[in-house]
Length: 240
Length: 240
DNA sequence: ATTATAGTCTAATTTAAATTAAATGAGGAG
DNA sequence: CTCCTCATTTAATTTAAATTAGACTATAAT
Image (cartoon, rainbow over all chains, first blue to last red; front, side, top):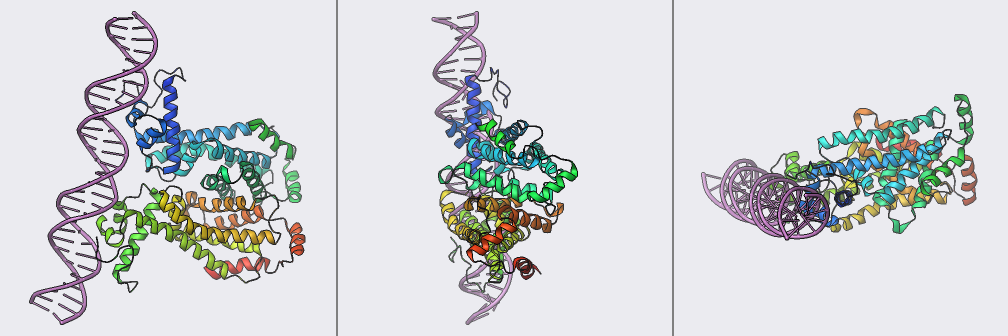
């Protein structure tokens, strides 16, 4: 057993060589996990990717399972944070459907361009062992809450078509986004096209047509202010 | 090595006790594969599920990999056949968007209610080894072709919104459907609700609003005949 | 210059799973 | 009844990977 308590950076000026190695291992694990799946993730592959020998991993993580669990946790946590920040940056009176637009865009951008972690967490949600899964569900739930709120707000504002079961619609949308990591590849089409198409698909898939919406929104007293400008603002604030 | 060539049913009155055992192993493998992933699928688990001892598997399949490959192949092949049959059963002049409706419904019903195979094939597409993946891609492609055609036809008929990249839109829709297996559970909501919501989401997500469509369809000379009745007909013909 | 400590390595050890070998039961053909 | 073939079992064998033990190296404080 290593001297310091594993699973935590030891002394930690939080970016010491040690901290960077730990991060390198975590990155490597995310890389492997996202491609090979839970059972297929070998410490030897992680080590190779991180340019160390396999036993060195144990200096930082007490077991394979602990390492994988941290990867998955970090995956959803960072994704949630990324999307949450983008939403928080929107003006308070942003139209609910524009907020959904923003979430769609940021989820896709983070998942596809930035992070193996998100992909690892998403792809393996279904095949990790029971206990890990249970703990993971808590974090997953937090991200789910964001979307639940987004959809709920749209519904309250009368912007959600009435024939949609909100929970089902939300999961279908998240599925479309999550699955993108399975087929998208930077070499065969720009991320912008994916984002643009996804936003349009979701907006029209969920939303009532403009004329109907007018009535509903007025009825519930929710304003349609900042309709188009808000979405642009979000993108600019996080990617400009 | 077994006497008969493995990987094929031996003598085969095609439902002999032997044939049934083989099918039982295949079912078991689909069950395990869909839950544990490629690397996590142990022959001992498959054997337990099939109520035999692990080495018995080798009487029917020459290796673990061959067994898994057949499961995945069968998964997509049967899904494709199921959807294709439903589409073929539609009247020839069915509106393209109604055909998509039908495909959405049948894909979901087959995947969620009928078959571990589809789930196994879908979930593991990304994590099987290179060679198996390559062969699998061929079969996946055949199913993809069906959807490519569906979307293309909708586009030709002027029923597809212009701001959608057809390929991206198609993959997003398939993602929404494929992912459903990750979250849907018969105990927490009826399949009918999922199907209904998905159909609505997809139709409105892809389609132009009715008034615009009229013009476009007329322009390309495609009739809107059998608009609503067709979708009902499809459901009835395969599930009624 | 010496030594303590963090960080890493090489060389076991252990364990789990696939695969193979060889033996056994069950049912039909002679 | 006895033999043959199919189907399946139990008992090796092999291999791959996680984990552990113990040694080595660099750095920096004394």
